[in-house]
Image (tube, rainbow, N blue to C red; front, top):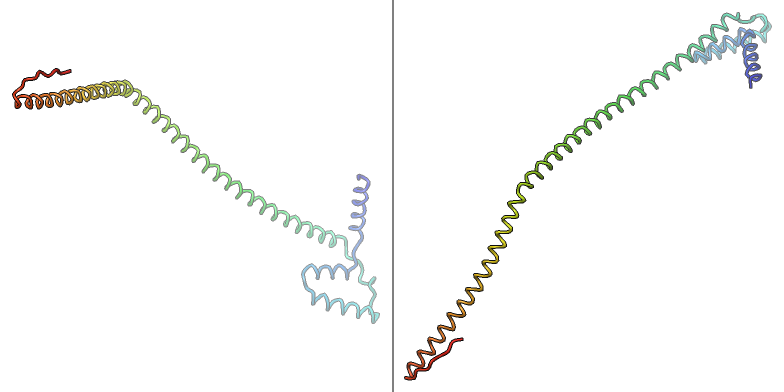
Length: 193
């Protein structure tokens, strides 16, 4: 690979040092500028003069190496400027992407802070409510006991009432029987169970 790179460098150098013919140089110049009509006119006139024998291609001579070198340097300069523009565009795109990522990071960071603050607030509210309800637990036990006692008393009261109603009904019935017995003139003694 080293040998091939050396050979390609030597080949390029040897080709770049070969002077270019004047007509080729001028044609390349016109092509580079996009002057196709002028190029057609030049080639037509050039080859007519050579056909008529006014001069030969060798009479025009070769372009001095300074012009060829300038042309090479100008082409390299154009290529480097194009590369620079491409790198600037890439750098601007990277900068925009970086700024966008920074904004997104800041947004998510702020959202995360809000969520953490809300979580901490909820935790403190839960602790406060637990403490608040812990103070109600003895009161709830007391109220539950009072409720159970009241329920028992209600049951006892309802049983006593039912018994009293039953006793009263039996007393009323006994009284009716006594009244019935008095009316007929016999006194019978009723035994109440």
